[in-house]
Amino acid sequence: MTSDAAPSPEPSSTAIAWSLATDAAILFAIDPAFVGGVSVRAHAGPTRDQWLAFVTSALRPGLPIRRLPVSVADERLLGGLDLAATLKSGKPVAERGLLADAHHGVIVVASAERLERSTVAHIGHAMDQSQVVVARDGFSFTTPASFGVIALDEGLADDERLPEALLDRLAFLIDIDKVAPRDAHVAEDILDQVAAARHRLRSVAASDEIITALCQAAAAMGIASIRAPILTLRAARALAAFDGRDDVNAHDASRAAQLVLAPRATRIPADNDASDPDQPEPPPPSDQEQNADDADQGDQQQLADIVLEAAKAAIPAGLLAALQSERGRRSRAKSAGRMGDKHKSLRKGRPTGVRRGELKSGARLNVIETLRAAAPWQPLRRRETAARLARQGMHDVDHAPRRVEVRKDDFRLTRFKKSSETTTIFVVDASGSAALNRLAEAKGAVELLLADCYVRRDSVALIAFRGKIAEVLLPPTRSLARAKRSLAGLPGGGGTPLALGIDAAAALADAARRKGQTPTVIVLTDGRANIARDGTPGRPKAEADGLAAARSLADDGIASLVIDTSPLPAQQSARLAEAMGAVYLALPRADALALKSAVQSTTNEFRAERGAGR
Image 1 (cartoon, rainbow, N blue to C red):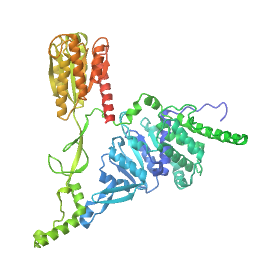
Image 2: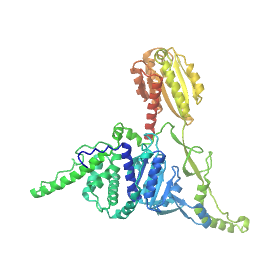
Image 3: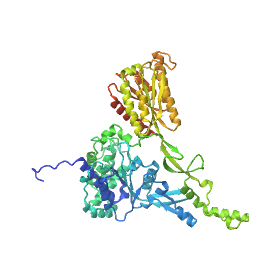
Image 4: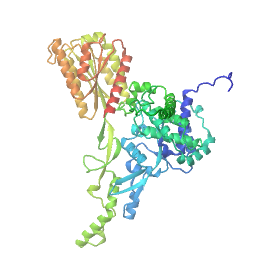
């Protein structure tokens, strides 16, 4: 390039993302099981289809590709008893599962962010051991299962991510959701180069200096898992094989660090992080040894710096900022979202497997699994039945052993898990001080929140406290029109019996829990209680009763939110929120729309944290 040549434009972020995605596809296609797999964050569409088509064309011809449903059963995933063959032959016959069928091939998982933890555990164990071990239904067997995984992450929100146990085993984490189809170009002329790299890969070696540099880069970027540098080394070896070399060089290590380490960074590495400050100093060597050691250490340090700088340059924009604001921590845990708590059910919900049990209390018999449990024992049971009939002198055809003998111990019941209904209880301060300050805005915000609860098919309830009473204006309901009518007729004025309002909310929340619902209490008040539980006026006793009621609600473990509706943030409301263990929002200048937005944001965040903590 001449000195007066125009500089080439900087590549766009989408171009960089697609370049990383195609590089990951090439390295994965060389040997899927060797590099583990790829996480592809993108919604279904032409861009993702083009990437998948490119990977498929680059894979070894005839390589098995299996698609894994999100709700796959364990017996289909791992294998088990072939019921038809067992009943036909009279002896247990094993059936291979999806993982074994994908041996030396690829498993494609759509909506992988929704995988059950048990499914992730089975996949991870098979990837670690390169085999599937099945021990169930009275027999056991082991089948080889060495495969790569393409996990399609279709999450709509930041808190919808692949399980960490699966991400840790995938070499490449790419995001092509923002790449337009017109920018998704692939080079078809590299397929022969991929095939040649496949034959060369096993002979590619890496020096100790390369391995040390990769480990130092991973540590400097705050990556704790030992799998990350191992996968980076494998990616570097695949890069060297693709370029037709038998040794990994600094360029291969740097590119591999960009692909594998950069998306996993949890902190910005300092300039001197490539060195280890805690390493003990060796005894002073001779001058000749000192010069040789200095040269070796200088070369090693330079290599480590090159790899680290390359990885730093490839850290996705905004990733570290998200981690520093702790969004990264929340994104790794499955959020509870806007649904209620998960609980087991006998008859309704999403099937989550089977269990041994008795047919009572409306439990649902799983006929196939019952027959599967009974099948291995049929030869023994037929002999037992024939011997018993012979002892009783019964030899006619009417008393011949049945084709399939099912006993009580064989009964298998389907297990279900469903989300409980969420009940949002609004407790509105309709006293004189609140009505004077913010009752109009509070009514508007509650109405908007009621509409949002209706869209989610949540139940809503409304409690108003004023004067000397707390009244349930609206029991838990899904009727939006009825809720709006109750809210519109909410009067204002009188004293502030705060304790009575919280007591009423606690009773309603307890009733909701007994019905299997998940209650959330939202209190809108200025916190200035002046009516005690017994109806007598007096601020000190009223405030003490209010705090006692709040602590009782906190002891019940009910999710709650306190919204301070006074013109200026009040200490009373903050103390109330602290006693209640609730989130506190002071919104002195917010209108109804801003109040609704703040409540939604806070309650969703609270529920997400509850989901991560379970």
